Length: 249
Image (cartoon, rainbow, N blue to C red; front, side, top):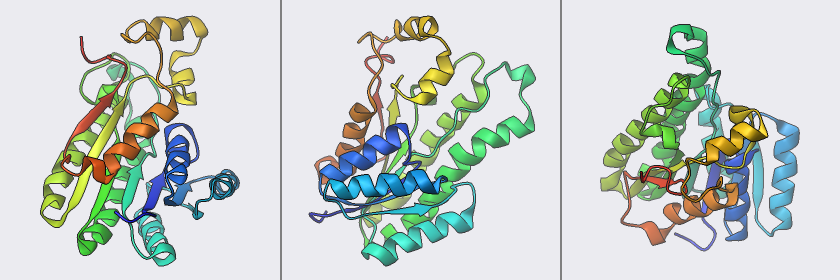
């Protein structure tokens, strides 16, 4: 990978995606950040430039193929190639029992988490396979490998992301394209606050983490930067669980 790898990050405006953009910028990468809110996106691109990175914001919604195709094409037009893609766009949807789930609720979660990941990989791999190199990192969750009451759609969507990751990795391997996923446990983000609701419920939720705390977005970003890099050149098709020991017991 060159000294200034070209990195594309979807869902880059908040939480893990944002921390990942900052981490790659500090490593000297050229960074394209993408999301649905233009004002926030432009601010982030400016922040990345203050770190010395060449950075662009491209507005895009991963649920729509024409927008994803355009996002990837504009990235390549701007920087000439695509070395790393981090597919971080995601939503937790509404919680509740299976008996109360609806087709609309299913679409709200799966269109972003599963279709969005699939479309992103489709167009990222189109470029990377032609180049003969590239590294894709998808974002799963602790819930990508276990169940959770009242979170069936989110859980199912992350199981699907892990399946897509493994399948794409096998397809890309012969062409030098690696595909992995990072599966965070609880992380200090707005999503965790929404999930737990109160300080008491959050504290109770974190007692199930052997390290007795949530991770930080920066800790997850460090894992993403590592697995995307040449230091992880023999790792593909893996789900790397970064969760403070949550899945060890």
